[in-house]
Picture 1: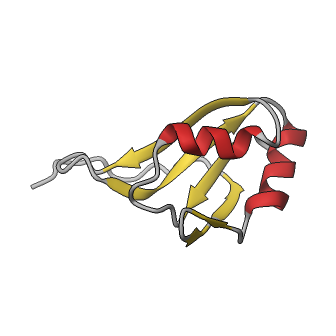
Picture 2 (picture 1 turned 135 degrees about the vertical axis):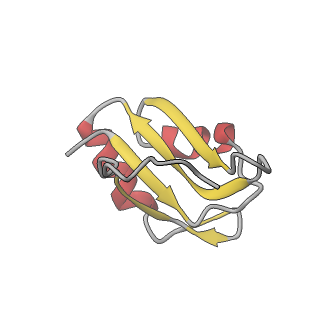
Length: 91
């Protein structure tokens, strides 16, 4: 199991620091990032948390997936490698 977790269905007002704080109860948080729209800067409603070790990552998935945080039911699972999408020009 990887130590990087996908966190979906985030409240659009959730900040990286509150995400880090939530996951820190399960172990060391290396990084917590919420993805934002490149044009508007608004949260895209999901992010990634990198945990210090596999046990902490596993505990966070078990403890947080399907639980409520800031008014939304979280989806937490192991992050998958990004597929090689066609990175052609955007119009």
